[in-house]
Length: 316
Image 1 (cartoon, rainbow, N blue to C red):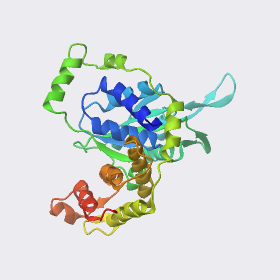
Image 2: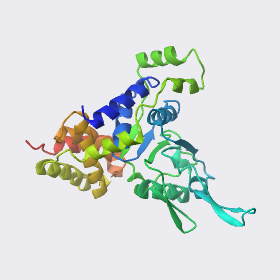
Image 3: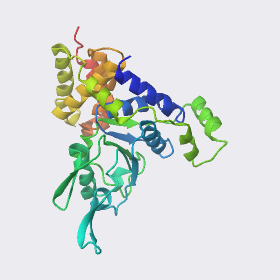
């Protein structure tokens, strides 16, 4: 078992002590964590998005903070600001909640563009700018942002530039009937707050193990024909009849990194087409822009990407 498998299995075991179901979402979350990406979680309230973030932070033993995005949230509320100390007659930096390891940006689309831009720099550059000075963020730095897919009044849709910074758009669905019964059986006799559920989670992976797993990621070999196949998939999004905007070269780079992680999780030191196809949709569905003609024909981003994945010939 390689280091990536060891880290992922240990974290999945701890998360499963609290979370029931959502295995696909958890797996994508851990792939993004190892690949140093960020995740946009989409789902109706009450599916456990906040609980998932807290579970992950506790299993990693890392610092965790949460920001509730609102229409009046200012950039300084995220990154911090300079405060004047009258006793010392000097300014000192009061760090904002972005100075953490795991950041939950709750309902990110409720904040205006200026505030979203402040988080954008932190996500991409791993640093923030405060009054003309830059300050590095702690390592690791992992953003889990959430948005409600059914309530759009008073929201500010994320611009394409910021959406492109997220490795995955992960959709959390309602649990199956049996899973929901298990949720009630496991947590229904204690408290509706769910806070005590985290007592079951133990720290099993540290920042050193996580860094070692990331180093191992780039040992996965990518053959030229597999790389060419990935590029063909990306380029197919740019000329599709139903797409206004296709995937960027950054999307290709991130897809390759994530696919490497998928290969390692299967215990392989080389990538195959299935590694790419397995994450093609969650990696690209927030990076493309369907035309009005797609909606008229009843097609959404997921359906278009599945059509592309099935249409591009797989190398032999």
